[in-house]
Amino acid sequence: MALGLVIFGRQGAGKGTQCEYLIDHYGAVHVSTGDMLREAVDQGTELGREARRYMDAGELLPDDLIVGIVRERLDQPDVVERGFLLDGFPRTVAQAEALWEVAGDRIDAVIDLQVPLDEVKARMLGRGRADDTDEAISRRLALYEEQTVPAIEWLGRKDHLVTVDGVGTPEVVSQRLIAAIDAATHR
Ligand code: AMP
Image 1: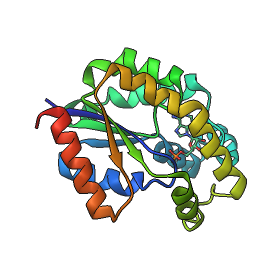
Image 2: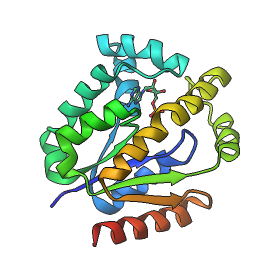
Image 3: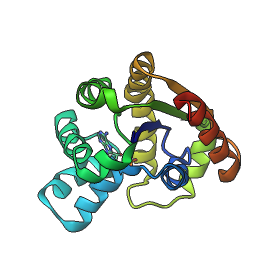
Image 4: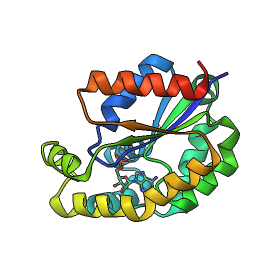
């Protein structure tokens, strides 16, 4: 059976790097809403033009819009066949509820990659992404606490929540993640 994983982590927690290790290890498809939106922005599609306004400000896109995009992606054949590592979604309780409704039975583990706030702030300032202004970073971190932490709690009550300490070298953290996921999914 294809593996279904959801990964949470504050911006700057090293989630992007860890996702690369995980998709390599498990062969699942990386479904990153941030990457999908950045691609739409680069291609100048209608979605991209709308998304950009929110992304530059560090705001979240409307739930309905993002839910539709994810729902479509999860139904595509590569994802159905190889499973998924969902990254950047859900970010609100409403998104978590929608995910549970459309794909709850396909989720094997919900991972929370934890890195303290001070550490992520330092890491993010060194990152230099186009939408990483100071205000956008602060706004994203605030929204994470307000909206995403409750979504983690909501999903954690539904499914196997795996909490992993994200402080350490990328290699050490990835070993921790794989061990925790294997234990949670009995692999
Ligand atoms: P990320 O790369 O995951 O940090 O996403 C970059 C930006 O895309 C976010 O700051 C939001 O503006 C937008 N975005 C990505 N995923 C979502 C989501 N699940 N809900 C709403 N907005 C999102």
